[in-house]
Length: 322
Ligand SMILES: Cc1cc2nc3c(=O)[nH]c(=O)nc-3n(C[C@H](O)[C@H](O)[C@H](O)COP(=O)(O)OP(=O)(O)OC[C@H]3O[C@@H](n4cnc5c(N)ncnc54)[C@H](O)[C@@H]3O)c2cc1C
Image (tube, rainbow, N blue to C red):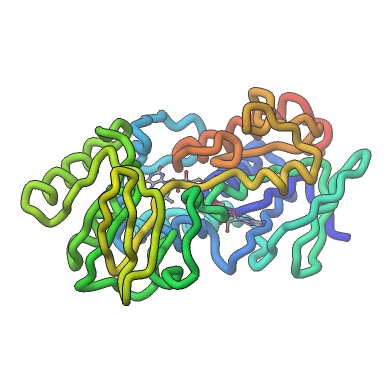
Protein backbone atom coordinates (compact mmCIF):
# COMPACT_ATOMS: atom_id res chain seq x y z
CA UNK A 1 0.00 0.00 0.00
CA UNK A 2 1.17 3.53 -0.77
CA UNK A 3 2.43 5.47 2.21
CA UNK A 4 2.53 9.18 2.97
CA UNK A 5 3.59 11.24 5.97
CA UNK A 6 0.35 13.19 5.88
CA UNK A 7 -2.91 12.43 4.07
CA UNK A 8 -5.17 15.46 3.66
CA UNK A 9 -8.82 14.67 2.91
CA UNK A 10 -10.46 17.44 0.82
CA UNK A 11 -8.63 19.82 -1.56
CA UNK A 12 -10.43 23.07 -0.75
CA UNK A 13 -8.68 26.18 0.60
CA UNK A 14 -7.96 24.49 3.98
CA UNK A 15 -6.63 21.25 2.48
CA UNK A 16 -4.46 23.07 -0.06
CA UNK A 17 -3.10 25.42 2.64
CA UNK A 18 -2.30 22.43 4.88
CA UNK A 19 -0.37 20.73 2.06
CA UNK A 20 1.48 23.97 1.21
CA UNK A 21 2.47 24.59 4.84
CA UNK A 22 3.56 20.94 5.20
CA UNK A 23 5.76 21.24 2.10
CA UNK A 24 7.23 24.51 3.39
CA UNK A 25 8.03 22.67 6.65
CA UNK A 26 9.91 20.04 4.63
CA UNK A 27 7.38 17.24 5.11
CA UNK A 28 7.08 14.72 2.25
CA UNK A 29 5.21 12.90 0.88
CA UNK A 30 1.95 14.75 1.49
CA UNK A 31 -1.04 13.44 -0.47
CA UNK A 32 -4.48 15.02 -0.86
CA UNK A 33 -7.67 13.04 -1.60
CA UNK A 34 -10.36 15.08 -3.36
CA UNK A 35 -13.77 13.65 -4.15
CA UNK A 36 -14.35 15.74 -7.29
CA UNK A 37 -12.27 15.82 -10.47
CA UNK A 38 -11.14 19.34 -9.55
CA UNK A 39 -9.95 21.22 -6.44
CA UNK A 40 -11.98 23.80 -4.46
CA UNK A 41 -15.37 22.30 -5.28
CA UNK A 42 -17.32 24.67 -2.99
CA UNK A 43 -16.01 27.61 -5.02
CA UNK A 44 -16.45 25.83 -8.36
CA UNK A 45 -19.98 24.59 -7.65
CA UNK A 46 -21.57 27.07 -5.23
CA UNK A 47 -20.13 30.45 -6.26
CA UNK A 48 -21.89 31.92 -9.28
CA UNK A 49 -19.82 32.88 -12.32
CA UNK A 50 -18.00 36.20 -11.81
CA UNK A 51 -18.75 36.26 -8.06
CA UNK A 52 -16.62 38.61 -6.02
CA UNK A 53 -14.51 36.61 -3.57
CA UNK A 54 -13.89 38.73 -0.49
CA UNK A 55 -11.26 38.06 2.18
CA UNK A 56 -13.63 39.77 4.65
CA UNK A 57 -16.49 37.31 5.05
CA UNK A 58 -19.15 37.17 7.77
CA UNK A 59 -17.77 40.59 8.77
CA UNK A 60 -14.54 38.97 9.95
CA UNK A 61 -11.21 40.31 8.75
CA UNK A 62 -8.30 37.96 9.39
CA UNK A 63 -4.67 38.70 8.72
CA UNK A 64 -2.88 35.85 6.92
CA UNK A 65 -0.60 33.84 9.21
CA UNK A 66 0.74 31.40 6.64
CA UNK A 67 1.89 31.31 3.01
CA UNK A 68 -1.53 31.70 1.38
CA UNK A 69 -3.51 34.91 1.15
CA UNK A 70 -5.58 36.86 -1.39
CA UNK A 71 -7.22 40.23 -2.04
CA UNK A 72 -10.76 40.76 -3.35
CA UNK A 73 -10.99 39.18 -6.80
CA UNK A 74 -13.44 37.23 -8.97
CA UNK A 75 -14.27 33.55 -8.54
CA UNK A 76 -12.35 32.82 -11.76
CA UNK A 77 -9.23 34.74 -10.62
CA UNK A 78 -9.36 32.98 -7.26
CA UNK A 79 -9.58 29.56 -8.93
CA UNK A 80 -6.65 30.47 -11.20
CA UNK A 81 -4.71 31.49 -8.08
CA UNK A 82 -5.39 28.10 -6.49
CA UNK A 83 -4.43 26.24 -9.70
CA UNK A 84 -1.14 28.13 -9.68
CA UNK A 85 -0.54 27.20 -6.02
CA UNK A 86 -1.18 23.54 -6.85
CA UNK A 87 1.30 23.71 -9.76
CA UNK A 88 3.96 25.82 -8.00
CA UNK A 89 4.00 23.51 -4.97
CA UNK A 90 3.58 20.43 -7.14
CA UNK A 91 0.80 19.18 -4.85
CA UNK A 92 -0.05 15.51 -5.17
CA UNK A 93 -3.86 15.53 -5.40
CA UNK A 94 -5.67 12.27 -6.06
CA UNK A 95 -8.87 13.44 -7.71
CA UNK A 96 -12.21 11.57 -7.85
CA UNK A 97 -11.26 10.02 -4.50
CA UNK A 98 -14.23 10.34 -2.15
CA UNK A 99 -13.12 9.27 1.35
CA UNK A 100 -15.83 7.53 3.36
CA UNK A 101 -13.63 5.33 5.53
CA UNK A 102 -10.54 5.91 7.68
CA UNK A 103 -9.26 2.89 9.56
CA UNK A 104 -7.46 3.83 12.76
CA UNK A 105 -4.46 1.65 13.55
CA UNK A 106 -2.10 1.89 16.53
CA UNK A 107 0.56 3.85 14.62
CA UNK A 108 -1.05 4.90 11.38
CA UNK A 109 -4.31 5.50 9.57
CA UNK A 110 -5.55 3.73 6.44
CA UNK A 111 -7.51 6.19 4.32
CA UNK A 112 -9.89 4.48 1.90
CA UNK A 113 -11.60 6.21 -1.05
CA UNK A 114 -14.82 4.91 -2.62
CA UNK A 115 -12.80 4.26 -5.80
CA UNK A 116 -11.00 1.55 -3.78
CA UNK A 117 -7.80 3.58 -3.66
CA UNK A 118 -6.07 3.39 -0.23
CA UNK A 119 -3.14 5.07 1.49
CA UNK A 120 -1.44 4.74 4.85
CA UNK A 121 -0.13 7.68 6.92
CA UNK A 122 0.70 8.45 10.56
CA UNK A 123 -1.13 11.81 10.31
CA UNK A 124 -4.50 12.57 8.73
CA UNK A 125 -6.01 16.03 8.27
CA UNK A 126 -9.73 16.18 7.42
CA UNK A 127 -10.66 19.36 5.55
CA UNK A 128 -13.87 18.39 3.76
CA UNK A 129 -15.78 21.58 4.61
CA UNK A 130 -19.48 21.76 5.43
CA UNK A 131 -21.12 22.48 2.10
CA UNK A 132 -21.51 18.84 1.07
CA UNK A 133 -24.46 19.07 3.44
CA UNK A 134 -26.38 22.35 2.99
CA UNK A 135 -28.58 23.44 5.90
CA UNK A 136 -32.22 22.74 5.03
CA UNK A 137 -35.29 24.42 6.54
CA UNK A 138 -37.12 22.65 9.36
CA UNK A 139 -40.34 22.29 7.33
CA UNK A 140 -40.62 19.71 4.53
CA UNK A 141 -40.06 20.61 0.88
CA UNK A 142 -43.02 18.93 -0.92
CA UNK A 143 -41.84 16.70 -3.75
CA UNK A 144 -44.12 18.55 -6.24
CA UNK A 145 -41.98 21.71 -5.89
CA UNK A 146 -38.53 20.17 -5.49
CA UNK A 147 -37.53 21.05 -9.07
CA UNK A 148 -38.13 24.72 -8.19
CA UNK A 149 -36.33 24.78 -4.85
CA UNK A 150 -32.53 25.19 -4.87
CA UNK A 151 -29.70 24.95 -2.36
CA UNK A 152 -27.03 26.00 -4.88
CA UNK A 153 -26.91 27.94 -8.11
CA UNK A 154 -28.29 25.92 -11.07
CA UNK A 155 -25.95 25.48 -14.04
CA UNK A 156 -28.37 27.08 -16.54
CA UNK A 157 -28.86 30.85 -16.28
CA UNK A 158 -32.13 31.88 -14.57
CA UNK A 159 -34.01 34.65 -16.40
CA UNK A 160 -37.38 36.40 -16.21
CA UNK A 161 -38.50 34.62 -13.02
CA UNK A 162 -40.07 35.72 -9.78
CA UNK A 163 -37.64 34.42 -7.18
CA UNK A 164 -37.50 34.20 -3.39
CA UNK A 165 -34.07 33.98 -1.73
CA UNK A 166 -34.07 32.85 1.92
CA UNK A 167 -31.18 33.81 4.23
CA UNK A 168 -29.37 36.84 5.63
CA UNK A 169 -25.64 36.24 5.23
CA UNK A 170 -23.17 37.33 2.57
CA UNK A 171 -23.95 34.40 0.29
CA UNK A 172 -27.70 35.19 0.41
CA UNK A 173 -26.98 38.87 -0.39
CA UNK A 174 -24.70 37.91 -3.29
CA UNK A 175 -27.25 35.44 -4.65
CA UNK A 176 -29.92 38.17 -4.53
CA UNK A 177 -27.69 40.70 -6.32
CA UNK A 178 -26.67 38.16 -8.96
CA UNK A 179 -30.21 36.91 -9.65
CA UNK A 180 -31.73 40.42 -9.63
CA UNK A 181 -29.85 41.28 -12.85
CA UNK A 182 -32.39 39.24 -14.82
CA UNK A 183 -35.19 38.39 -12.40
CA UNK A 184 -37.67 39.88 -9.96
CA UNK A 185 -36.17 38.96 -6.58
CA UNK A 186 -37.44 39.03 -2.99
CA UNK A 187 -35.22 38.30 0.00
CA UNK A 188 -36.76 36.78 3.13
CA UNK A 189 -34.73 36.99 6.35
CA UNK A 190 -35.96 36.02 9.79
CA UNK A 191 -34.21 38.89 11.63
CA UNK A 192 -35.41 42.52 11.54
CA UNK A 193 -31.94 43.70 10.41
CA UNK A 194 -28.82 42.32 8.76
CA UNK A 195 -26.02 41.99 11.26
CA UNK A 196 -23.17 40.24 9.55
CA UNK A 197 -23.11 41.47 5.94
CA UNK A 198 -19.85 42.84 4.65
CA UNK A 199 -19.97 46.54 3.62
CA UNK A 200 -19.83 45.82 -0.13
CA UNK A 201 -22.80 43.46 0.03
CA UNK A 202 -24.71 45.92 2.24
CA UNK A 203 -24.13 48.67 -0.33
CA UNK A 204 -25.00 46.48 -3.32
CA UNK A 205 -28.21 45.29 -1.66
CA UNK A 206 -29.24 48.85 -0.73
CA UNK A 207 -28.63 49.99 -4.30
CA UNK A 208 -30.89 47.31 -5.72
CA UNK A 209 -33.55 47.76 -3.07
CA UNK A 210 -33.75 51.52 -3.53
CA UNK A 211 -34.25 51.20 -7.29
CA UNK A 212 -36.93 48.55 -6.78
CA UNK A 213 -34.95 45.64 -8.29
CA UNK A 214 -35.10 43.74 -4.98
CA UNK A 215 -37.81 43.55 -2.32
CA UNK A 216 -36.76 42.89 1.26
CA UNK A 217 -39.00 40.96 3.60
CA UNK A 218 -37.28 41.32 6.96
CA UNK A 219 -38.39 39.56 10.16
CA UNK A 220 -40.25 36.95 8.14
CA UNK A 221 -40.43 33.31 9.09
CA UNK A 222 -41.55 30.76 6.54
CA UNK A 223 -43.76 27.98 7.92
CA UNK A 224 -44.40 25.86 4.81
CA UNK A 225 -44.14 25.54 1.02
CA UNK A 226 -46.89 24.29 -1.32
CA UNK A 227 -47.45 23.80 -5.00
CA UNK A 228 -49.71 26.35 -6.71
CA UNK A 229 -49.94 25.43 -10.39
CA UNK A 230 -46.46 26.04 -11.82
CA UNK A 231 -45.54 28.20 -8.81
CA UNK A 232 -44.24 27.63 -5.28
CA UNK A 233 -46.66 28.98 -2.66
CA UNK A 234 -44.76 30.25 0.39
CA UNK A 235 -46.65 30.42 3.70
CA UNK A 236 -45.34 32.92 6.25
CA UNK A 237 -45.88 32.57 10.00
CA UNK A 238 -47.97 35.76 10.07
CA UNK A 239 -50.55 34.13 7.76
CA UNK A 240 -49.41 35.82 4.51
CA UNK A 241 -48.85 33.70 1.40
CA UNK A 242 -46.59 34.64 -1.49
CA UNK A 243 -46.07 32.92 -4.81
CA UNK A 244 -42.78 32.46 -6.70
CA UNK A 245 -41.36 30.62 -9.72
CA UNK A 246 -38.39 29.44 -7.66
CA UNK A 247 -37.01 29.53 -4.11
CA UNK A 248 -33.28 29.63 -3.30
CA UNK A 249 -32.10 28.76 0.21
CA UNK A 250 -28.74 30.25 1.33
CA UNK A 251 -28.59 28.97 4.90
CA UNK A 252 -25.00 27.73 5.01
CA UNK A 253 -23.71 24.21 5.56
CA UNK A 254 -23.58 21.72 8.42
CA UNK A 255 -20.72 19.70 9.87
CA UNK A 256 -20.63 16.10 8.61
CA UNK A 257 -21.04 14.94 12.20
CA UNK A 258 -22.01 11.34 11.46
CA UNK A 259 -18.76 10.80 9.52
CA UNK A 260 -16.61 12.28 12.30
CA UNK A 261 -18.46 10.39 15.03
CA UNK A 262 -18.06 7.13 13.10
CA UNK A 263 -14.30 7.69 13.49
CA UNK A 264 -14.71 8.27 17.23
CA UNK A 265 -14.34 12.09 17.19
CA UNK A 266 -15.99 13.55 20.30
CA UNK A 267 -18.45 16.44 20.10
CA UNK A 268 -19.33 19.06 22.69
CA UNK A 269 -22.03 21.71 22.21
CA UNK A 270 -22.53 20.40 18.69
CA UNK A 271 -18.88 21.08 17.72
CA UNK A 272 -16.01 18.59 17.35
CA UNK A 273 -13.64 18.76 20.31
CA UNK A 274 -10.09 19.74 19.28
CA UNK A 275 -7.01 21.31 20.84
CA UNK A 276 -5.54 24.66 19.72
CA UNK A 277 -3.92 22.97 16.69
CA UNK A 278 -7.14 21.35 15.44
CA UNK A 279 -6.15 17.89 16.73
CA UNK A 280 -9.15 15.79 17.75
CA UNK A 281 -9.40 13.39 20.72
CA UNK A 282 -7.97 10.78 18.31
CA UNK A 283 -4.21 11.41 18.41
CA UNK A 284 -2.77 12.50 15.02
CA UNK A 285 -6.22 13.10 13.47
CA UNK A 286 -6.61 16.84 12.75
CA UNK A 287 -9.43 19.01 11.38
CA UNK A 288 -8.86 22.13 9.25
CA UNK A 289 -11.11 24.78 7.69
CA UNK A 290 -14.90 25.03 7.94
CA UNK A 291 -15.29 21.55 9.42
CA UNK A 292 -13.38 22.74 12.46
CA UNK A 293 -15.50 25.79 13.27
CA UNK A 294 -18.76 25.01 11.46
CA UNK A 295 -18.68 28.38 9.74
CA UNK A 296 -15.67 30.09 8.31
CA UNK A 297 -14.05 31.88 5.44
CA UNK A 298 -11.30 31.27 2.94
CA UNK A 299 -8.75 33.24 4.98
CA UNK A 300 -9.73 31.27 8.11
CA UNK A 301 -9.29 28.06 6.09
CA UNK A 302 -5.83 29.18 4.87
CA UNK A 303 -4.82 30.10 8.42
CA UNK A 304 -6.05 26.80 9.85
CA UNK A 305 -3.70 24.94 7.46
CA UNK A 306 -0.77 26.77 9.06
CA UNK A 307 -2.10 26.11 12.58
CA UNK A 308 -2.44 22.37 11.90
CA UNK A 309 1.08 22.08 10.49
CA UNK A 310 2.48 24.05 13.45
CA UNK A 311 0.80 21.47 15.71
CA UNK A 312 2.18 18.56 13.69
CA UNK A 313 5.70 20.04 13.84
CA UNK A 314 5.40 20.69 17.57
CA UNK A 315 4.12 17.27 18.61
CA UNK A 316 4.92 14.82 15.80
CA UNK A 317 8.11 16.11 14.13
CA UNK A 318 9.81 12.74 14.47
CA UNK A 319 6.95 11.03 12.61
CA UNK A 320 6.92 13.36 9.61
CA UNK A 321 10.53 14.37 9.15
CA UNK A 322 13.30 12.08 8.05
C1 LIG B 1 -22.07 30.84 -1.85
C2 LIG B 1 -20.88 31.05 -0.96
C3 LIG B 1 -20.16 32.22 -1.03
C4 LIG B 1 -19.01 32.40 -0.21
N1 LIG B 1 -18.27 33.53 -0.37
C5 LIG B 1 -17.12 33.70 0.37
C6 LIG B 1 -16.29 34.84 0.19
O1 LIG B 1 -16.55 35.74 -0.61
N2 LIG B 1 -15.17 34.92 0.97
C7 LIG B 1 -14.80 33.97 1.88
O2 LIG B 1 -13.78 34.11 2.55
N3 LIG B 1 -15.58 32.87 2.06
C8 LIG B 1 -16.71 32.70 1.31
N4 LIG B 1 -17.49 31.58 1.49
C9 LIG B 1 -17.06 30.56 2.50
C10 LIG B 1 -15.89 29.75 1.95
O3 LIG B 1 -16.22 29.22 0.69
C11 LIG B 1 -15.56 28.61 2.92
O4 LIG B 1 -15.35 29.14 4.22
C12 LIG B 1 -14.28 27.88 2.44
O5 LIG B 1 -14.48 27.36 1.13
C13 LIG B 1 -13.92 26.76 3.42
O6 LIG B 1 -12.82 26.04 2.93
P1 LIG B 1 -12.61 24.49 3.31
O7 LIG B 1 -11.36 24.08 2.61
O8 LIG B 1 -12.73 24.32 4.77
O9 LIG B 1 -13.87 23.72 2.70
P2 LIG B 1 -14.42 23.65 1.22
O10 LIG B 1 -14.05 24.86 0.44
O11 LIG B 1 -15.86 23.31 1.35
O12 LIG B 1 -13.60 22.45 0.55
C14 LIG B 1 -13.83 21.11 0.88
C15 LIG B 1 -13.27 20.23 -0.22
O13 LIG B 1 -13.33 18.88 0.24
C16 LIG B 1 -13.88 18.05 -0.76
N5 LIG B 1 -14.53 16.92 -0.11
C17 LIG B 1 -15.71 16.91 0.57
N6 LIG B 1 -15.98 15.70 1.06
C18 LIG B 1 -14.95 14.90 0.70
C19 LIG B 1 -14.64 13.53 0.91
N7 LIG B 1 -15.44 12.71 1.61
N8 LIG B 1 -13.49 13.02 0.38
C20 LIG B 1 -12.65 13.83 -0.35
N9 LIG B 1 -12.90 15.12 -0.57
C21 LIG B 1 -14.03 15.67 -0.06
C22 LIG B 1 -14.84 18.96 -1.50
O14 LIG B 1 -15.13 18.46 -2.82
C23 LIG B 1 -14.09 20.30 -1.50
O15 LIG B 1 -13.23 20.43 -2.64
C24 LIG B 1 -18.63 31.38 0.71
C25 LIG B 1 -19.38 30.20 0.79
C26 LIG B 1 -20.49 30.03 -0.03
C27 LIG B 1 -21.26 28.73 0.04
